[in-house]
Every structure is written in structure tokens, then in C-alpha cells.
Image (cartoon, rainbow, N blue to C red; front, side, top):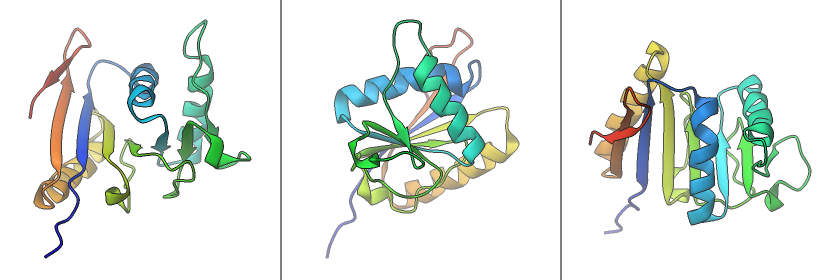
Length: 154
């Protein structure tokens, strides 16, 4: 009997900060460990907003990246998409605000970021949690505290 791969799946419940504030730091950490990252968004507008944010998030720093609209996506350390592709062969995928990954077993880690004020995102994330738990993946749930730090809940 072949055992399914267990993927590490981290859920980040945003309560005090915006995605734009949190994402660059998490992406930098992921790049330090995995060298390539894919970020999946639910809309082109959201993808474009994150595209801009990664270029300007700090006065003296940026995160090099490309989108599905750019040439040479396979050379990008960070790839932004609204689809399911993984041209840079990343081992970690960020799922933003309800994005769904069709092949989680292609990754070592998924990072699910969601806004705790959005009923729609909460509904999607709860369904994802149940599905991934039934599939016996390694789940971790982090909730943002009032001082904007993270507390591990599960």
C-alpha cells in the first residue's frame, strides 16, 4: 500500500495586520529555507497589488519576483499567480485569501493566509482545514495576537 505524502500546512489567521504588512516577512523567511516560492491569489487585482507591494515594502529592500504575465517565470525566486502552475519548481506555496491548490502533494509546505474579518475566507479555510486533516497532513494554526505577534493554537 502506497502512503500519501504528508505536507506541512501552516494556517495564519490575520486579526491585527493586513496581508500586505505580513506577507513580505513570511516570504523572506520562506526564501531562506526553500529558495523558491509560489504565491497563489484569488484574483488578478490581488496578484497585482501583491506584485507592487513586494517591490516597495521596505525603503532599502525588495523581493525579486515575477507574475504569470512576465517572461521567464521558471527563473523567478517568487512567482505570483492566479492559477495552479508552478514554473519555478517551488516547494512552498502561499495560498492567499481563499485560494485553493489543486495538487498539494507537489509541495513540502503550504502557507494559508486569511483575514479573520472575512466570513467568506473563514468558511473556505475551515473547509480546507477539515479536508487536510482527513488527509492526515501536518497542520499548524497560528493566530495573530493584539500585539501583532503570532500564537500557535494547534
